[in-house]
Image 1 (cartoon, helix red, strand yellow):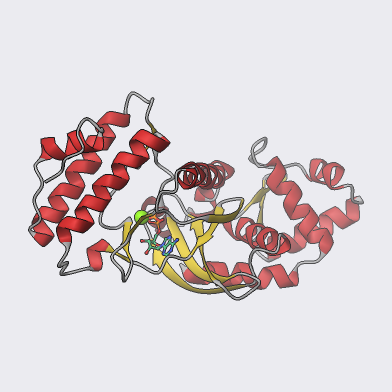
Image 2 (cartoon, helix red, strand yellow):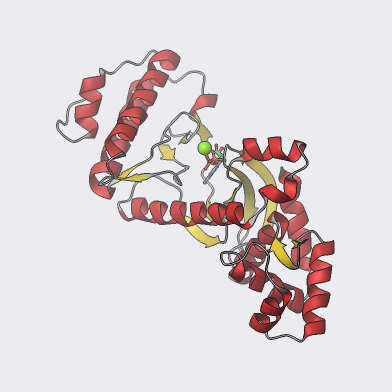
Amino acid sequence: MPEDIRRAANLTTELNDIQFKVLYTIAKLMNRYDSIPPETVRTLSDLSEAQTLDALKSLVRYEAVVKRNTGYGMLMLGLDTLALHDLAKKGLLSDIGPAIGVGKESDVYECLDMNKNPLALKVFRLGRISFRALKKRRDYAGMQGHKWLLSCIIASEKEDRILKMLEKHKLPIPSVRGRAFHTLLMDMELGIPLYKVKKLDDAYDVLASLLQFMRDAYNRAGVVNGDLSEFNVLITPQHKIIVIDWPQAIMKDSPIALPYLMQDIDHILSFFRKKYDAKVDKEVAVNYVLAKSSKLF
Ligand SMILES: Nc1ncnc2c1ncn2[C@@H]1O[C@H](COP(=O)(O)OP(=O)(O)O)[C@@H](O)[C@H]1O
Ligand SMILES: [Mg+2]
């Protein structure tokens, strides 16, 4: 839904300081109320009653906020607008371009930093599939409840944390430039997802670097991706791999880390076997990733 972000980008240029203040206050109160009393918004924003009510009314008109019973609730467009405003204010983002990836749980846009360098902006939209189904059932606003928006924020916080852990160990992942609400701004990687690569002459080398990646992520950073697949592995023109998409990652000390690591290994081995006819024995790969052996072939 690329047009969503465009509406938000427009809104960042239309809202005045008071409207932004009220919108920020609503974001602050999202985890305490489903429906935020206007009086609470007024107190926290330090505005007059008339200013608060005027701003709320216009935000409802813009569809950034919704009126629920006697109070107000944040909508996705409102949160998108805050995130873009925040990133621009921090000097991290100057322009938003086309969508480059509409994934399972997010929309990813190409954008530019202040020096016109390309960046990737990931905007979390968890549970998109059920969201679409609900939209059809005309329950759009319900799905935009605070609980859903908060879980998108939590996912972006988690992916930010994990990417920084991996970066500390110099693993090939996108560097994070910034985070705001339910969005994450990263370096734009000039690779294509493996599922789009029909032929791979050096399939064994690429598979080996991917298994080496899993070995380092697990043993050095203590992280299991948990959703590793041909959709989340990018390959550069020089055939370097970059692993993206980490909000569901699992820490090594979790009781489910090992089963998820096995699932990741299984998935990668079977993809390389079926697509590129590159075969590595499962036990050999597992021992390698667990650092019980240093031999792959
Ligand atoms: N840092 C990045 N650089 C380039 N492309 C990216 C980057 N992050 C994501 N993408 C693109 O966006 C798509 C969706 O991103 P991803 O993190 O996998 O989210 P999802 O959870 O929605 O699958 C990816 O398949 C990829 O094509
Ligand atoms: Mg993905």
